Image 1 (cartoon, rainbow, N blue to C red):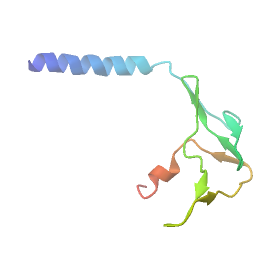
Image 2 (image 1 turned 90 degrees about the vertical axis):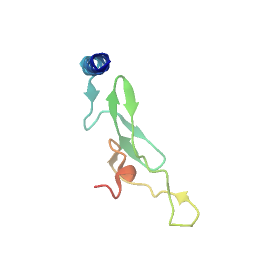
Image 3 (image 1 turned 60 degrees about the horizontal axis):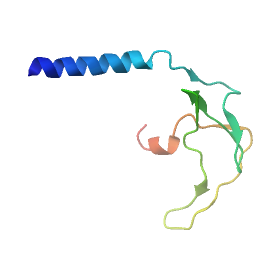
Image 4 (image 1 turned 45 degrees about the vertical axis):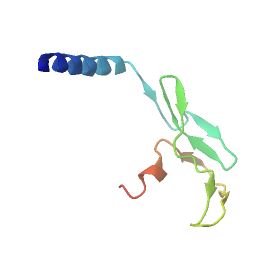
Length: 89
């Protein structure tokens, strides 16, 4: 039984590793840049899908109503979800 479990785990691991080869992530200064109401954002392309993480859409102080976020100048990087990481770094 232990041998079977080990074989299944190894097979799954190998499939995952080999399946990810050739999957290109495309990123760069002018790659995946688009406009939002508040300004431009830059994401990345993975497996032919454009990905933008952590685009701010509103702001609020604790226990207050949500308001529209202030516009920004330039291009804002949205390759990481910075709000999800807050307090963990």
